[in-house]
Image (tube, rainbow, N blue to C red; front, top):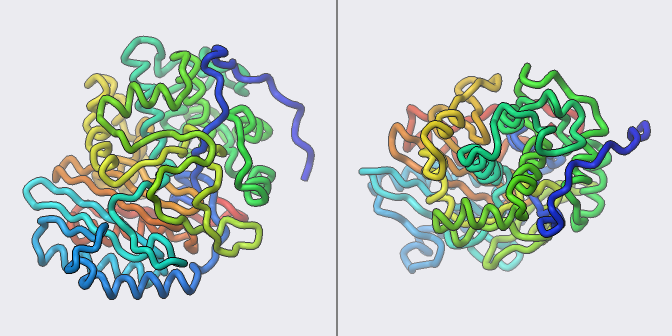
Length: 429
């Protein structure tokens, strides 16, 4: 491979008190390239698959005995039985180790339940109260913080990013709006081969935002700003730097005080380095040099920071999804800007400002080594859905999407959550 271009100018640095080491936010193989890093296809471990199936067969026993984490809500028993069957069938077919699903629908009751294993080695069952890494669902928090700055008059959506962050190639022609809507044209650093090789070789490495941008800026833009849609983690890294520059605070602190605390999301955080609150499930991935399956639970997710490093819980995401869709932290005018959805090239799918729309569902999905997540709200039916899976070791068919589709085909058949699998390009999407 040819050598990288000479180093580019550094982005404008935050005030000294706001400088910090990058925190993790990665995204692995999301459909439609919604996160950018794809795990090399490999079958899920036989032990995990068998353990998951065995756990599924014992669900009714555990539930009857009050097993923690296997919690059935007050949804109609017939509907619950259909959901149980669909989820267990999808798990068995795909070989998922563990899954947690929450479905809350006004007037129809709640369905909250865990299936399978949180740890295939010990046989510990999946539970509904575990912490998890949420991958690119993080983008919804980061962009919300940007939009709060818009409401305060400190940032304008149609200003160029060069007004806030130095050193962005073509930054004078790339707006904040284009970054938030995935229309900047900037190369996605999580598709850079050197980056992927380095991450596979040393998943404990700590990355700074600038190092991530260096991978991206070593490549020319993929298209002129505003002329196409293409998912790029580079966009959200720049928005994280914008927040730090304009607020004078580290991103984690700003999110805590301005996004998380107002909604009492006490179990959600952007932790430093590889910190992961307990209890949590083990996360299984095949994003390894040889494609073998391993645990990624303690990997350092600093390789994507503002794009996917947040940890959260089922209940906090239950609160967050409708707050996001309804714009509870934004003015009505700014929320209207956020929800100006534009097509991305797949039927029923569109993207606004850090928010995804799939057949009426508003929210986001997220994947990074070991974990997959969906957090979404359906305003038409006042329904909220959260899906948590402790593996991304799939064959290109996202586990979370398989579960999301299985649930919505039954619970909201007019609004099915479905994303087509993207074509493979080498080892990443």
